[in-house]
Each structure stands twice: as C-alpha cells, then as structure tokens.
Length: 101
Image (cartoon, rainbow, N blue to C red; front, side, top):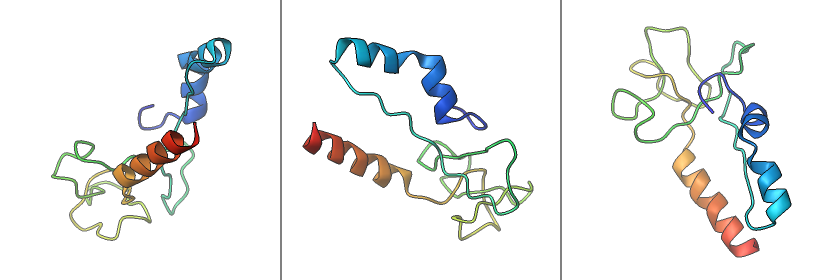
C-alpha cells in the first residue's frame, strides 16, 4: 500500500486472501508501515524505510516538511519515512514463515 494506505485496505482491495483461502496453496501477509508520527496522524501515514524509499540516500524525514517520525533519530536532514530497519524486519518475517510453514 502507498503512503496513507493501510494493510486492511490492501487486504480488502487485492483479493489475495480469498484466493489463498480457497486454494490453500499460499499464505498472504498484509504488512502495515510504521506510524510513529508524534503529533498524531489522522490520515495514517504509515511509512516503510528501505533503500529506494527515500530521495536522499536513505536518510529519513524531510526537515522542510512537518513530518518527523519518532523512530527517526535525525530529523535535521531527512526525508518522509520512519527510522525503522524494515529490511531486517521483512527478512526476519520471511525466516519465520519459512521455518513455520
């Protein structure tokens, strides 16, 4: 899902869960980007932080904008994503599924 979208919307729109349930041949996981914007976020701006998700070499947040996620420890020269290590998160998630199913 894109910035402002949710994993629930993705699950409803994609139709993949229904196919997985009916075929029993694969599992579907709809991940939700981290939303730790400290001033609240009515539009659910969950973000993913990985190489290619930022326009300035991977530094999070944008000092020119009003967005600075709590997980980002350097909001002086930043872009619009959170500071979580999402590559490691997805890698661990894949390891879990491979060992469990």
